[in-house]
Length: 102
Image (cartoon, rainbow, N blue to C red):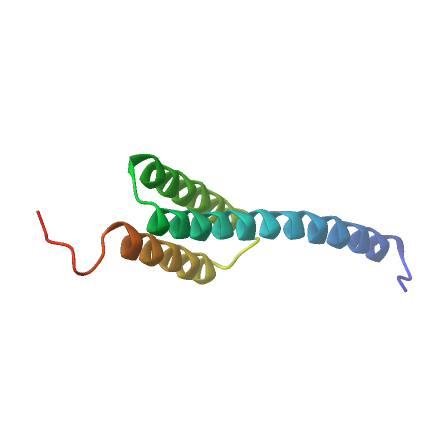
């Protein structure tokens, strides 16, 4: 247990930061899952609306990941790794390997 006033304050600050980080990480994970779900939906029923939904979910996830890295909730390499995962998944669904190039 904390013995002096400053260490008690540090415990309170650390707990507050932990809760904020937890909610931020949860939001990032939710947006990543939504992006993968949109990719799955697009692969099952391709169309312009589905493609727009995939792009919108990708943009939202990228934005949240960038903000998490900026705030310090997530390490920059972790953020880059997650963005790479998302962009690869979207690219495979939207532009399949066997499709002719224009």
